[in-house]
Image 1 (spheres, rainbow, N blue to C red):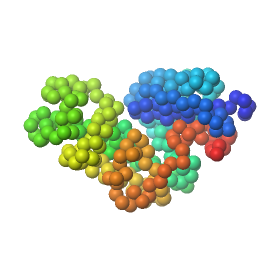
Image 2: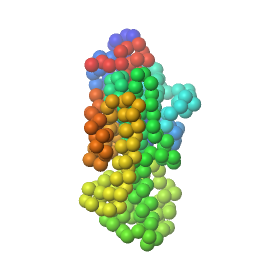
Image 3: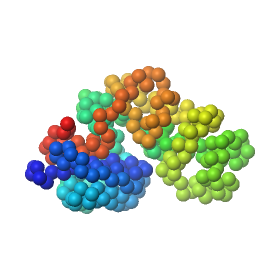
Image 4: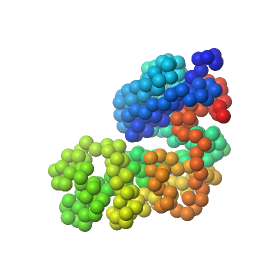
Length: 294
């Protein structure tokens, strides 16, 4: 590979946002950019547009074009080879393309390719581990079937309780009142809001829930305790498979630790690198380089 032309793009594509980073072959950071949702399962065409636009913005900052970039993609919704085929077949404007699930590149970055497990608690939730070159996945079913303990799950449970309060079946609390300010105070308003609501919309309610729980709000505490149990269960399953250590990642990584079970807390460590660098590692390997540049 021509060292003068070796530039690597790492994309961390989640349900709420797309993050891009560009490094040269020696690991020097050249640019970063943030764009919109890039979950190809929920909105394939929209995700492609957001990914391309975010990459193009980062390339412009670096004085490059997207055609200069060997791209690695970690994408929410890229779970099976069948779901990968349409993405790999798309006419993407990069020098080369390699793609995998967002949890895989996050784990690759967190442990530098070594053994370990991650639990992502963001808009969605998933447990993932690399152990002896084998992959282990638990959760990650998406909003319709799972994502227990995630931001979307947390917000959804809060909105469901707000609906009960509108019907007079649940005593309003400060959290309920804060949710109703967002979604409407009447059956008609909440119904209209819910018809258009996405996992990202529910996820934006999660900070309200954690803030309320910290203040002793009974509804907030109930939701957070149930969510923390789900996150602890994901981590414990990976530990039972031999993960050794767990990195807690995602938008809720900073608020969950106090609520997690003691055995899970003991297993938590900080990641070596993030998902964007994990995607860059994957792209480097595809071009015959070592994964790590450090």
